[in-house]
Figure: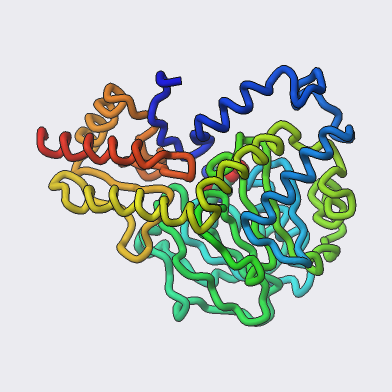
Amino acid sequence: ANDRVFNFSAGPSMLPLEVLQRAGAEITNYGGSGMSVMEMSHRSKIFLKIFDETQEKFRKLLGVPEGYKVLFLQGGGTMQFGMIPLNLIGKTGQADYAVTGHFANLAMKEAKKYGQVTIAASSEDRKHVYIPAQEQLKLNPDASYFYYCSNNTIEGTQWQYVPETGSVPLACDMSSDILSRPVDVSKFGLIFAGAQKNLAPAGLTIVIIREDLAGQELPITPAIMNYKSMIDKDSMYNTPPCWCIYMLGLMCDWLEQQGGAAGMEKINQKKAQMLYDVLDNAKLFTVSAEKGSRSHMNVTFRSASEEMDAKFVAESVKAGFTNLKGHRSVGGMRASIYNAMPTEGVEKLCDFIQKFDKEN
Ligand code: PMP
């Protein structure tokens, strides 16, 4: 077990060792069933128990109120870019989008296929290194929903507030910060997240939807992309990602042990602060995101030259860290420090950065 590296991948990302070990121990024979969870019918009693318990644990951790449905889907965050407008834009034919990074931009482009999209805010003027303030949002009262991405995985920025949009429901991409901090779910119409960063292996996408928002889909909506059919069939309109749901259940137990979303937030804040402090005090590095908009999940930084960046990345690999190279679209470095990254991993990275900074 100790041959594991400190993996700073942006996603799929590391999972806690305890979670992997538990899954490993149960992999050939789950709970005396004589089979792996991977081999179970999704309609079997034993799997339905896993499904229901995972739903319950997840709802409790996130604080999902009555009137909201939690869906366990496939298709990733990217499928939600299309699924949201297909299901929600029909109400008025219009939607507001805050474009604060690569993935919000993709979502906005997808929505344009199905209705009239207004850019309610954009951080493109400064290469997405900040999050616009509430006063900067240009809100359309006739929008069917207001879309934003709470954590911009590539750019390393994170919304530190929940936008106020009056009666226009919020649709939020929490792919890279779900359950890393508490959220008031009742402020949202819809939340979605690919599970592969903070929660589980790739293949599971979680959607939390206020039930009254479903059922207004455009007639062209594919059945598998229809929230209403998924609600009516309890996420089993077709085969759900069974193994990933089971893994989410194990992760929920682990998160509960960390003190839930509030406990996780404290740990995550501490980890991020440590790293930002070291980077701000280093002579070689600058943090990409502006203060006040910095992400607690993806810490993006760079040196003055691509050569020095490459040297840093190469030496980090030799020192036992992986995946510190920034996204190919922005370059530089990125340390993704999701829920499962232990404080020890961040401390070791801080030491490495300080040593590198001194030696170069
Ligand atoms: N939204 C965000 C914030 C992301 O970080 C990603 C993937 N890194 C996506 C959406 C796309 O997710 P997927 O690859 O699961 O489709």
